[in-house]
Image (tube, rainbow, N blue to C red; front, side, top):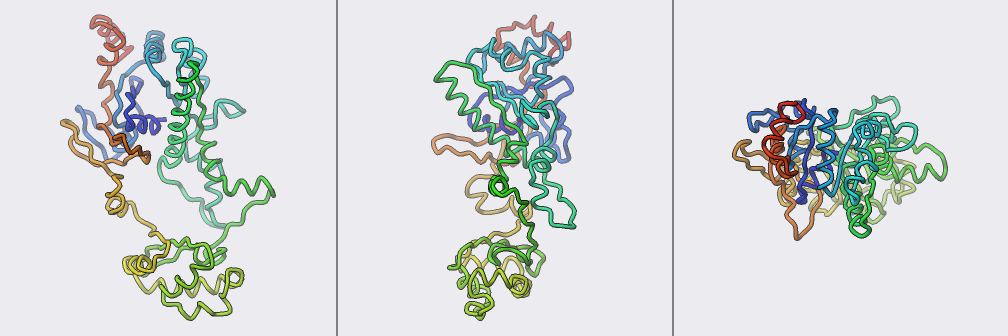
Length: 383
């Protein structure tokens, strides 16, 4: 949910983040931290909440829940990652909020969706996206430990699905004047990323084979270790790449070798072929192979470390790490959203807010006067 809101903020939406009095838990998911308005928030929090306004409301209090409904009455979209039963408890379900705003887009991002036996089950991307959708199993070789995915990768995919769904729902609401409900889940997003494999399983009900490096269908759709323990990934399907590849890496003798003449024969002798190629790649470091493979026009990519990614010249050229400048938070780099509209500026507008940064501002926008805001603050309804 936060990643979807961040992307919409990058695209120019006024995103109001409603936090509980204890604040968003991810503010403490550090180190490292970014200082802002006397508050120390984790870099992770800033990465998915930049450009938003923050209001702190105790939604478990009737007056607090009423404030949210008043905000919804002025909004185009209500975006939440609350589970369905909690939405209903506070009066935030689709039907209840549509009564306050008949053309509202009500958007829920959950672990498993709003219906079905697991609608009430909590889920993170590790559990609902990677594990249950089959991704983790698909990349775990027999006998190996299941890998632990990186932080929030599934959240990003589901967040983009949510952004697309919200934009489509806004268009429908604009045309019909009727409220729309958006239901995006980590589980469904994970299953969608596995569509290539699952499409086959749906037809033949057979578990796809898990292939070691010496069992791959193509030696040119594989990965190889370099002399400096870095890895090169190749993806060159098709017979026409074979001669170019062999010539580039110094294996000209293999081009007409009867053991490797075409794809079917190479597959039958894959273990032998991979061993030969391994012995070549391990003779040079990644930097030297990069020049050789680029000059040959081959399709390849390095297994880049994150410390390499932030200095990648292509990333710089297409603006993947813009700088945020703020008079209080200072200057720091962040990660751009992957969306892009040529005529629009989708660069980050500023850092993530401190908790309650905009409480007074947002409440004044609802028409509350200073006395009313003071009463709410003294009653611990807002901060």
